[in-house]
Amino acid sequence: MIKSLFSLASAIVISFCTPFVTTAQQTKTVASKKNWVNTSDHYTQMLIDLDEKFSPENNSSQGLVKYDTLISIPTLANVMAKRKDEEALLIIYQKALKTEKEVRVIQDLNILMDYLKLRFRKQDFALKHKISFENAASIVYDGVADLLDDQTPAERRPAAVARIIKYAGLVKGYVPITTILQEQVLKQISGKDMIYPLKKKMEDDLSHNSSLLDGISELCRKYKLKGWEEPYAKLRKQIEDYDQWAREHVLTNARTDFRLSPEEYSMALETHGIDISPVELVKMGHTAFIDIQNQMKPIAAQIAQQRHLPSADYQDVIRELKKEQLYGDSIVPVYESRLKYLEGIIREHHLITLPNRPAIIRLATAAESAQLPVPYMAPPPLLNNAGQSGIFVLPLNEPAAPGEKSADKFDDFAYKAASWTIAAHEGRPGHELQFDRMVEIGVSKARALYADNSTNEEGWAVYSEYITRPYMPLEGRLISLDYLLLRAAHNYLDPGLQAGTVTQEQAFKILTQDVGLSIPFAKIEINFYKIKSPGRANSYFYGFTSMLALRAYAQKALASKFSELRFHDFIISQGLLTPKLLKKAVMNEFVPAEKNR
Image (cartoon, rainbow, N blue to C red; front, top):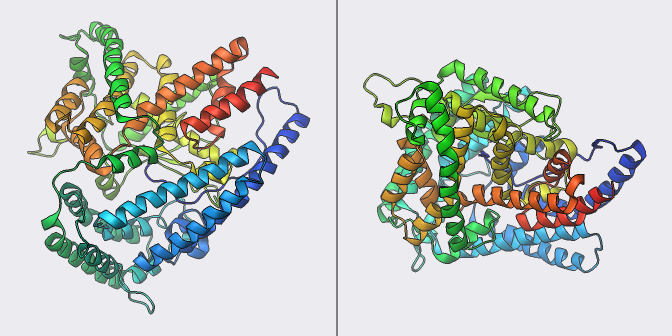
């Protein structure tokens, strides 16, 4: 899982040597690439400049120091001013399409145009139909935490205090962010037939806010900031008052039916890079679920025989493997050893080109675990990167406290057998390698961000599990297939819950019994389908199957000339293209080039 994706991107265009390419050939290739990338980046920079104007926090997270002390001001006037600028930019892109000849530049222009058009559709729907509850605590935490990180230069960290002061409206020209958000909701409430926020989502957000506010003070103390205590106390009181106001005026009228309208669910699928219908997703998921279960059974039987277990049923074997939990400081060393092993496999079997530096892994803080209690990769800045890398973050795992029921705890991420596939997914060759490669070898700015879709990101990560799975021990292979089983289940549970053809009880039973998730993890998954990000869960398996189809096409087209290493290097060199654009790149660029090698 990717923790967050930024609204700005850039690429460092440097030479990247592939096997058997001469210096002259390489220079010519890089120069050719740089020409089209420069043209594409010229157009993309227009959108980046526009975003910079209205999103200081994002700019700062991308390394633009001059934005460190600034904050977004989310008034409706600013929203509409940005929309006007975006509409003017869309006209510029449409005119450019008529004059540009380079295929990849045309592709990138279409990426930028599609991004803007979808943004307009979503914005229009929200303005016309929805009452939004913007979580002030989350906005402030993200704005401060982006600056308070071990990889952020020490001289930049004091800017977090300036942001706290401005979020609280304690400096001339600023009003409290909670005041802006409250006025916005009051105006929306006055509209006719408006859709209130989902009750469960609001309750979840509000329940985490105390931990987020505690996390801000912990970060300020950790980095020994000065002058933060008084403005922080005032800001905390403002947010607590805002949360109480939201409970009384919004939560009381919040809707209990989580289902999106077909129009909104369709936009959600499109946002995540999914270009097939919910009906097709459901069919794909059901078929794959049965096939994966059949693959798991003989592996579970082998493990049961080797360990002298009383049952060879894969669900019982998984329960036994989950007893081998890792706690506290013992978690990271095990994951480091898994990555080292996987890197050896990658090099030995020429799966993909690896960087010379090690991957970065750390445990999450208590606040981070409260906000996102699953493993994730925090991506590096894609704009003005000053040497930062992606960070593989693992949630805290501690033994059950006295009186705490084991059924109430996560047991899904910090046990030995799960560490293999999680390391491949979040680390290498998965998310960490994909995002760092975009910084290191360079892709156009449009492809680095504005093509962004979880079908590409999560599809590549699940595919990374697939190409390393044959080299895992039996226990690792079983749990890797169990994670794949979960991804197949996504494809019929997410659309099924939205359509009303699957109940929450049915989904919970499938996740806890057939897949073997812990109770809290199953609840998070269902919450994800219903509330957090409807449609996104489908992107894991759909992206994976799209990758398999591309690989099969390339293998058939190239026969004995097919190179797994060059194929994988090419795929992640393309940035975050949607399945259709990535297929065009493989057909029109990779295959012809490989035939001529």
